[in-house]
Image (cartoon, rainbow, N blue to C red; front, side, top):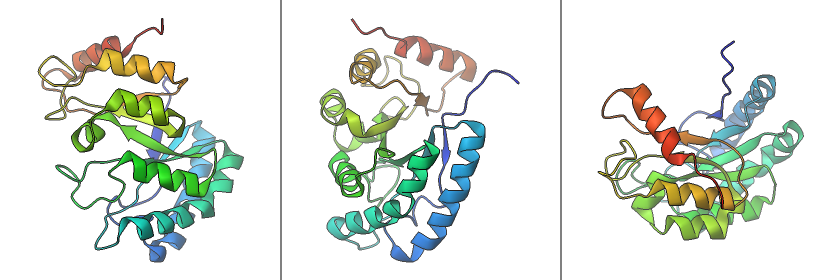
Length: 209
């Protein structure tokens, strides 16, 4: 009614108890299949997936198990025309023990699944904390990124001059990568939220030269 689109919703329950456990695969498969139907109904381009926490699982085994789980639903996502985007989160500050906490690990999983509809949600705030080197990462791995989130760092607040990320250059790198989807502003405003969102939009509304 208001001309708004939904950029993404959750694909399944639980950020911490996710795809890196085989005992979760039956449940997650059913949840994703159900949410793919809703995504088609409401023209939602992305469903957000989560690796889950390590809980003692090494990264090699975690990648293999996560890829197994995603393979079970990849064809359904392809048929629906919907991306399954696994979110990259920091395990240093906000999500202790989360497994998909580095770009290289997420890209490895995507390569193992080998589906055009299984990608990553590149959260710039989280990856600044874990890795930095944001623009080079976008240039090198942008083809694996199906959605983006923003926020200022440190603090996860507005993308103003009190934080360290220079978003105009980051947005140009995203545009130059060929990405044409949504960018989700996932920060906690320090002041009026409408004004903060307007400022974020203007900051990120860059043209590719």
